[in-house]
Image 1 (cartoon, rainbow, N blue to C red):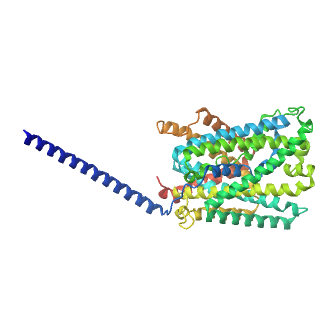
Image 2: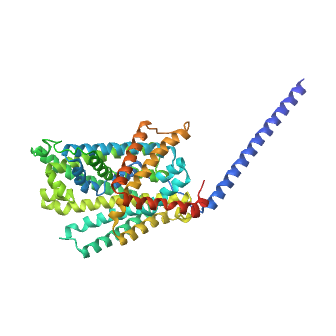
Image 3: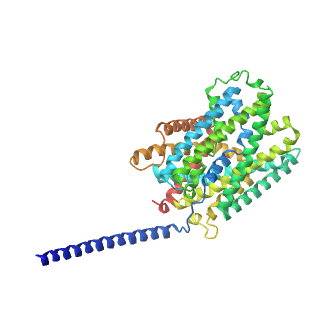
Amino acid sequence: MESVAENKMIKSSVQRDDLSAGISFHESKARAAEKLISSKRSSKEHVTGKLTRNVTLLQGVSLIVGVMIGSGIFVTPRYVLLHSGSVGMTLIVWIASGVMATLGALCYCELGTLIQRSGGELTYIREALGLLPGFLVSWTMVLILKPASVAIITLSFASYAIQPFLSSINNEAEVLIKCIAVICIILITSVNCVSSHWAGQMQIVFMIMKLLAIGIIVFIGASRIAEGKYENFDSPFKGTNQNVGEIAHAFFSGLWAYDGWNQLNYVTEELQNPHKNLPRAVMIALPLVTLCYTLVNIAYLSVLTPAEVLSSSAVAVSVAEKVHPTLVALMPLFVACSCYGAANGSIFTNGRVVCSAAKEGHMPRFLANISERFNTPLHAILFPSFISICLLMLGDLDSLLSCFSFVAWIFLGGTFLSLLVLRWKRPDEHRPYKVWIGIPIVMLVVSCYLVIAPLLAKPRSSAVALTFVLSGVPVYFFLVKGNTVK
């Protein structure tokens, strides 16, 4: 009996060993197959290196704030006041625009924590709506929207940087402005190529400088109100525009000043602990910017009359001229620093957009390579900066960007739609952060309006922009489709 029991135990032990050996064999075989597929995919993509998660929460906040606060808040207030018609409605537009930007950013938080890959709109739209829509986003953003935005920001930087030293702007000054803008792009691009850490630290420094500039303006306004000079707020809604279209234009101008709230989603792969830090950065940055913009506009209107705001090409400089001669020289430099910080953040994210597009097969593969020496997407950073310099040389950037501004809202609307589609396609997938379903629906409606309104108001320029976007369709089918990573 003991012998039989021993034999059974030995047999059972051997079977378990065989089973374990079989499982180990199959696991090893599966791992080997996975490595083989991975190596084949890597060799097909010709991509080398990998980006590391070195963007901290503070750097993420400074990236959002730094890109959002550019030259807009120092220039745009006149257009918001022009279209809203009254001081009270102007402040409502600024606050409501901040709320809408925050709602949009919360939608991006869900997408960014669900799909933890860099690229922003092109990644989400490709994942939810398909390969062709994803390519059209890459095609337009990489070749026009992103480079043109950098060119505009650096032109603003150059204009404000030399303003204290020039009495008037002539043809020679315009050439000088363009040369300074080109030098600015080269310097920022060089820093971003060499070190992501340096670029991030530089972003923090310029965020502090622009918040200091805003703090000075708010302090001036608070001092005026404390002195009892708040006559512009006595009848805040007097003269409010009753035309719904004009109010919509006021929101369009306000939202333009808030542009940049989606910047952190372009660098999700490099953000530390993205499922926590992405929502945290948004919830710190967006309320901060909304508060700054509201207080700055109150300060503007405590120093300048509505008529003076409307006649000013740079409201912050006009405030400085009216308060103290010393600020006349300092304020343009503060605005220039603000623009420089926005350019730095834009160039940082542009490189990641190009890198993501190249990984998807939308752009040449070498653009996705990561420098082994600097651990940055070197080619991807250089490529859009080169296009920015070319656009600077060609000129007429305002017309170009105004043509394509509504296209940006097509892509934003497509991203909000992507969130809804992914809720339907992947209902059970874990979402570290999830927004109420009504928020993307509201933002999709807002996006549709901001697309349709310019299309009806400026059909010719809008048609030119749409033609360029759709010109990517034959490019996709003839040159890209076979290379797209599925």
